[in-house]
Image (cartoon, rainbow, N blue to C red):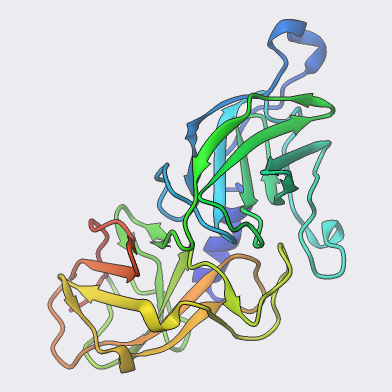
Length: 269
């Protein structure tokens, strides 16, 4: 596994953050329910609250979300699919349980159910039979965002798997791989929470644009946009960069009316 995918795996599992365990016997009964708000439900790639989409990796920040910390491992999978409960914790999204990557007292990483086709959804966390407050989040067909590292730089690789970094930037005319969340449904469809084993293109590929400093790359420069084999909910975009590449350009993706944050850059020279 490349450094980049290993980084994302740790990010999904929450292993890069540490939260203390909470002992339920030491907490007054009136305060034991999971606590969070709509503002604390964010796109895991952008860490921005707001519109999410089917098959988007999302994060809930709050308190009393779980009594323990548990990151998904191989033993938690069933038929190559993520679990819908960990440590007695589940996330209900419009009556459908979201697939889980990680639970802890302060954070849950989960997958918005693939089959949702609504403009808003009611979300609540249930921990061992105790439910938190229902909150409403907006949904769209896509909610694109690049995973980031080192501040506001896109998490990306060279074609051979080397991390694109200040010491090893992207170059003009090379093929790079960008990692993203929120690119929506695929063709063919995949079961919610399923870890794909083959390349699976996004349904809205014809609408996808990649902008560098606000200028769209040619549609023919996008070699692949779809799910990353070996993951659930993780997308990648294989892109050949233009012959003339400005240093550290702003990079943005647009799918129809939805766009990723405009402040993200790509290490390039």
